Image 1 (cartoon, rainbow, N blue to C red):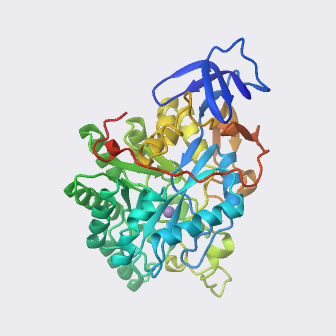
Image 2 (cartoon, protein in one colour; image 1 turned 30 degrees about the vertical axis):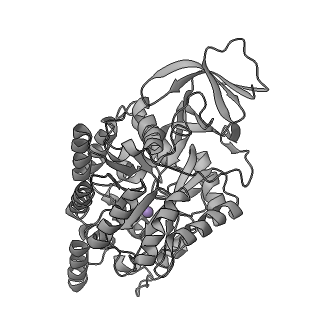
Image 3 (tube, helix red, strand yellow; image 1 turned 90 degrees about the vertical axis):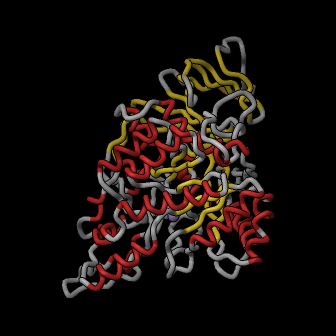
Length: 475
Ligand code: MN
Ligand code: MN
């Protein structure tokens, strides 16, 4: 064998065992008590928890938005992801208006490879307009291995929004080729009305951004997307779900076996709108906005009930300079609080798994629930399974060794490895931390030190299991 990891607690989405894992040629070769087996390298994992490599279903790298691009490129962002126990990232290929989805997606894949991405990767294809030329490339895009689409139900003035007619048209076309269409679920009309009203009343503080997007803005849009998908007997996916009402919709759908899936993000599980207070509240502006503790709690419940299938970071590492780009200073030298002048997005690629581990430490979810939402669910839904998502014979040896007792306090961005000079997780303490990350049998992070090499990431061609689009009763 190439590598044996001994005596750890190996967790799957449905159970756990103490045992050894043997790896050969990048694949899991055996699991169990492998006392007599030998390998070139051994890792003693006594007292450690061993989980499948994480799948971050939502990252943005080298992806201009509202005039910002972020501090990380595909290389630095993927190194940070590896430190956070993520071995596959799903980034976005946001096709600008006037360009075509298949052609644009190819440039995104090439860019990630050229930059030397160190973990495996895939893309969701975003469309921002609908016409016959765009429609004609849906099939090619799916055949390229990009079997999921994201549509923005908001961002009209950014020229990214598609209305319901376009969304339904895309769902029809994508369904023909077995792809999954998901949404950035925000009701544009309500949010736009609220923003205009808020500006007219001079309410432009950081918190007012969140107040223009109350929970109804999200859950109405979720219901609408679900209705559209149901009309075509297909499934849908909710990106970055943030509300308790959204969690309720998903829990009900799960009970009914409907193919309605969602991811939430680390920040919606652990941060609240208090982050918009103070002079630096602008750093934490993102959409959907951070909400209340009761929303956090319900999202944890959604994970506990295995109704939230995936988790992402929505990593958009806009630097301080980028966040401040359009802000003006008042006579006192301080920024004039104007939420309309701040790019929406925040950094967090390394914090997804630590947030989930901390949830286990606090008794909110089990290790099995963690595996379900950290890797297994995403792999199943998006067509990465059985290659990814679970530690089992024949699967890629994407493995994370977690020290469940190690405590880490986020002292500042320097605690983390991303190239972004602020973090919303500042001052928080985590119990349990990923220490070693293995990608296809190669140790890339060794007890907190990056030991991988540039360009070790591979593009993952995906094809979605047709069953996924019919029912969620596949657990
Ligand atoms: Mn979005
Ligand atoms: Mn996003």
